[in-house]
Length: 292
DNA sequence: CAGGTCCCCTGCTGGC
DNA sequence: TGCCAGCAGGGGACCT
Image 1 (cartoon, rainbow, N blue to C red):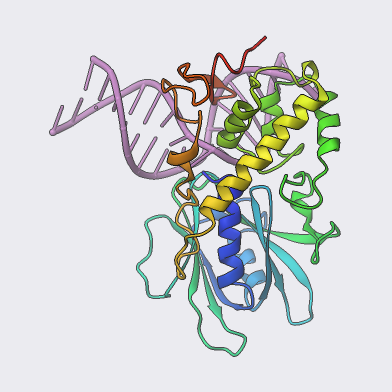
Image 2 (image 1 turned 180 degrees about the horizontal axis):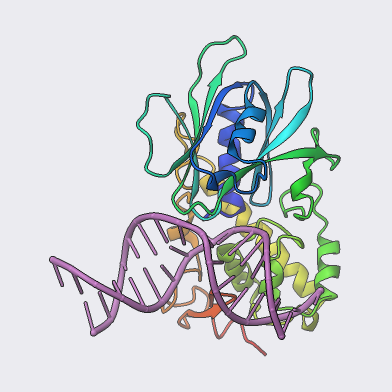
């Protein structure tokens, strides 16, 4: 479900409601939510108990909490929302959601009880995992297990010229490259389609057939459309609700092509087309975005 | 490495 | 009204 802007909204909610508090108790329901944590859910609970949450970080669509033990050792709890994950901050006695997978009982450093953090995920494509932190340019480093995820376009470590070089060196559909999180992270199906429409490039075109300036333009538009979505979506979340679904209202109002099949292209009026791509769908204007 | 396929899971929508 | 196929914003494993 969420791409970079929606995940960033969630991160901000975590920074406000979870950072600075301590994990008193953790409860994971079922094994699936911790399937990326090989030692299993009980082990993950044990590792988290008593940890102080020092920071909420994000790269692309990956979130992590920096959690520190009493000796000052900092590690990461990775949180991925998958397609349908939500993080909620609620009173501990709030009724359990249907697809509740994890609860974190939090306390203030003074010991006073604080609201509960919950991970709810209908489809359970998301999940939690533990990782060591390794050097990577941030105050607390980067989780080792996501070291293969490239910087996203909204972080300082992002090097667009390098991404363009790597794209140009490959023979692959440009949309596939945009969705490859090892090349540039945070872009999903929606913002890939929107960026390609803005840049007037058809996603099936091969990266090595496009010029460097064109590739740069596509990436510029990807960053721009995500920044706009963030501006529109980052404003309204309730104090006790870290995030509902991140969707942010940007969706219905500002999308030019995603989900707009049959409706006129906002630029030229030609009906927007949808077609299968990589087991998903692509939306584009057949006139503005020629296959060449 | 490139590209295709399938899978994980639940719920909603639209066609018949 | 009911049933069923198709689809959903992610990502990884596996195959050729």
